[in-house]
Image 1: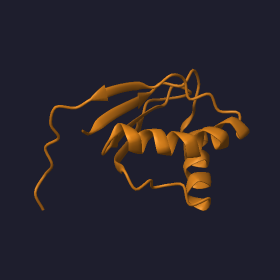
Image 2: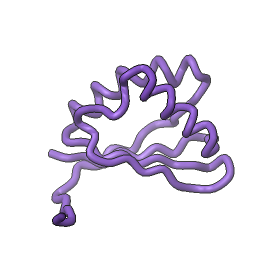
Image 3: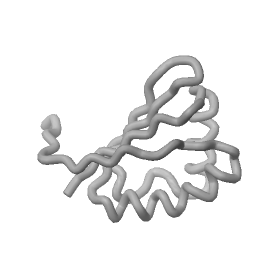
Length: 93
């Protein structure tokens, strides 16, 4: 079952987000095999991130990989909100 995971860090700028993503790509952690979609939005130091994963297990695996990296970078992602989805409708190409 797909899940939506929403992060609202206490403080994160677009520049910090970009630095984190760059590091995750460099270390081969991102994009995770179970990650369908990632969105980052907000303004100033109130950027938020939403992730669509194929399953809770994929998210937990991803979290185990990025947790130490975020900690090392001094980033507090906050407690994620995890929502089980009933249905995901995708645009046909």
